Length: 111
Image (cartoon, rainbow, N blue to C red; front, side):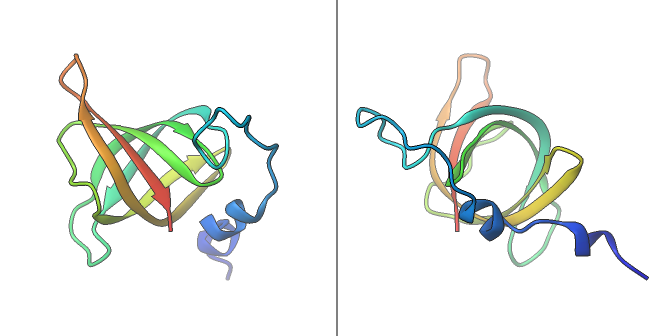
C-alpha cells in the first residue's frame, strides 16, 4: 500500500529546480512569488505545531504571517501546500517583525 508520503516532494527537490536569476539589485538568492496558503510550523523535536500562513515562496525561502513572535536563528519544521501536494522540510528563521495589524512577518530559509 502506498502512503501519501511517497508522493510528497522534499524541499531539497524544490531547491534543485532551476529558476530565473534575480536582478543584481535584488538581495535574495532567488525571486519570491506570492503563495498564500495555510501552513504549520513545528519543533524538530515534536510538540503541537503553530498554524501560520505562507505569504510568499522562493527556491531558497519563505515569508510567513504568524500570530506570535518567533526567535531569529531558531530551526523549525515547515509543512505547507504546493498545488495539490504538501511539502515538509526544515527552515531557519532569519527575521521576525511586528506588523501594524498585530501579526508578525517571519522570513525563513530552507535548510
